[in-house]
Length: 335
Image (cartoon, rainbow, N blue to C red; front, top):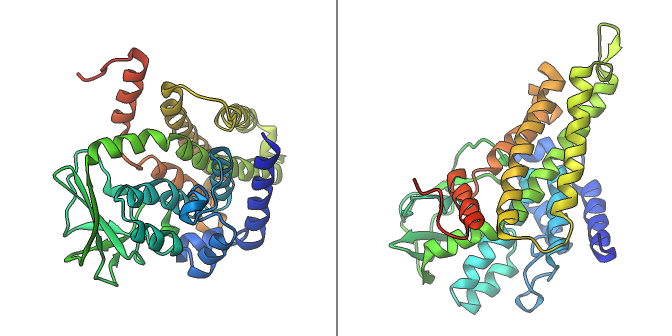
């Protein structure tokens, strides 16, 4: 890892220890409060990858990935919010070509947010029924392969429950909307490109979640006793945890290597990391036994977040089809 990337990682960890550590469950229950998001912005994390000429921090990709990874170790919701702002909403707003909207968007980082679940496979979008952040001021709709962006009129959307990243507090928003402030055509191509370009980001987030889940499970296995011995003494506990820790190290070395990757590798690392996170957080939950399901322990939260992370963009079948196409350098897996 390059020295400058290591410094960014240490800066993010220092911030998290001060501002987030010990509040993970509270954030999941009560949401990301404006004060915390403001401090995240002041540190430059909320606009991490946005170029400086557009008012962002202008971090390089390697630095951005470690920021997401560190954030996810403490709060999957916070990592997801930073990811969505930088990797989904910013490209979407930039694509409209509206400089004034772009300036407004970046200057209000953490306030304007578009829910990436809008971009679902086979969906056309609807101006009357969309999922949004409660504090969003703009809304995007898919209409006949055209993405249109409107100013939001409703200020009090209904909050809906979801599996993971609950700290983000998605809302159920109903039209009508106000002034159209941007649009561009070719939404299918834009979304499919976005799906592949963000593979590393998703991998970084779920590996951060996995890291915390493993750390919790290993620590618990040291202090929890059964039949007079610590859990770590039992092979069915110690062996899987050791294997998962080794696998995590290998995956981290690949994702954060900074090396150029093929299209197959880029898409594949997302799917492999998601599978790993699902299995690892489930193992952590099982290691804690009944205590793992108690919200105060935070283990079930990690499991929920790992599962929910796979819902970003198109279903897995589409990612697998893209991997097959990359393998054969031609369309594959269509039957």
